Amino acid sequence: MSASAKPVYLFANWKMYLSYDESLALSRELKKMFKGLPRQAHLVLFPSALAMTGVKDELQGSLVPLGAQNTYWVDRGGYTGEVSAAMYKAVGVEYALVGHSERRTIFHETDHDARQKIEALLAVGMTPVVCVGETLKERNNGEAEEVIEAQIRRAFSNLTWPKGCELIVAYEPVWAISKGIGADEAGKHCDDVEAEKMHQLIIKLVKNLLPDQNPVVLFGGSVRPNTVAYYLKQPSIDGVLVGAASTKFSSWQDIVTAALK
Ligand code: PGA
Image 1 (tube, rainbow, N blue to C red):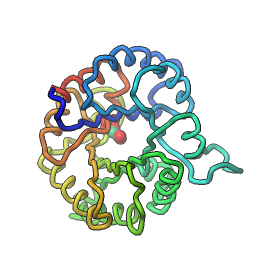
Image 2 (image 1 turned 135 degrees about the vertical axis):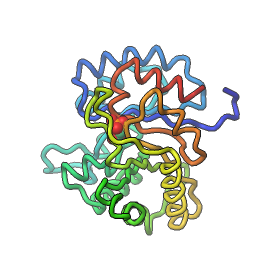
Image 3 (image 1 turned 120 degrees about the vertical axis):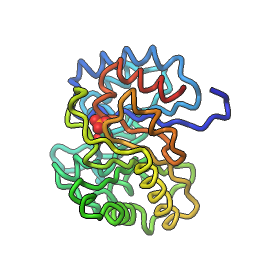
Image 4 (image 1 turned 90 degrees about the vertical axis):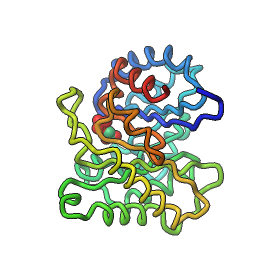
């Protein structure tokens, strides 16, 4: 790949799939792979909160940054079970997912929560990765665009985006997300042209709210080694946010290789 090639964002969301020991073992394997990465590869790993510092120690010397799967917006206090953006920042975590559909549906997080998290992350100098996506019911009702529009508006309106901080959105149709690790557990197939259309919509909506920003938009939803290039060939798909297939060394290596071809 030439030095001027477009950056490719390859984000690995390990969700709650890996134990502490498994997270460290995968990190040791990945460290070797990270040595040969071209500059265009923008990889970020999102381990569990438990494994974060262990993974960081394993990856010492590699340039791949880490992200949190979830953060709380108050710096510290009586918030049982939470870890704040400020606490992650203090141990060198640079990114955080916000508004993932599993947080929205299982843990009842709202657009308002997502907005609080975005503000807290920006305040401590971390980069939010704002996840948006419609459910199957919303899509079947013809509401996909209006759902995305509302999520984007509530995330980004009346916000001053800090200089030098990338604005990253992940489009993850809820119906396309894997239900587990095996190949049979993939969600429904999202057509690449349909994904591209939604990415273009997201870019337009963000630019209406924050005209100076050039949003990076990632696709997420059962991305596998055999589909990553299919999505990345679309002009508005800057990268992928991968869950299940990022938690095994071989499938993640195959995804990275296919993405950078
Ligand atoms: P998946 O998850 O790749 O397992 O579908 C993507 C995500 O939810 O971030």
